Image 1 (cartoon, one colour):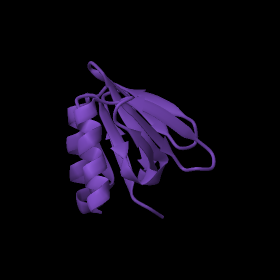
Image 2: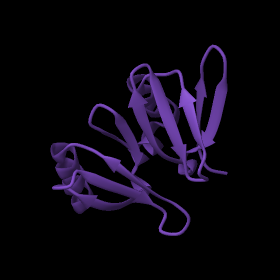
Image 3: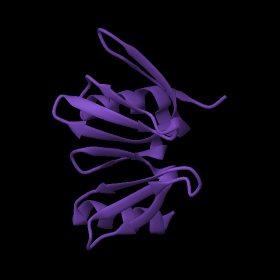
Length: 118
C-alpha cells in the first residue's frame, strides 16, 4: 500500500493515497482537493498549511507535489501538457481523467524547466 496524506480539522478527517490526489486549489481559507477517482473535497485548511502538512507527513515522498503560484499544489505524476502562452496546465492519467487548470506564465515556465531537467 502506498503513502497517504491525512488532513484533520476540528470537524473532519480525510485520508487519501498520494496517487489519489491530482491537485489542490486554494480559495481563501478553504482548499479544494481534486481526486483521481473524480471526487473532490472542500477542506477548511489554507493551501500553505497543506503544503507544510504534506512535507511533514511524506518527507522526501512529498516531492511528488509541487506548489504552483499562490493557489495550486499539483501532483507531478499527472503533468500531461503545459502551454505557457495560454497559461494552461493539463493534469491527466491519459486514461480516465483530465483536468485543465490555469497558472501564471512565470509559474508554468518554471514548471516546464523543472520537468525538462528531470
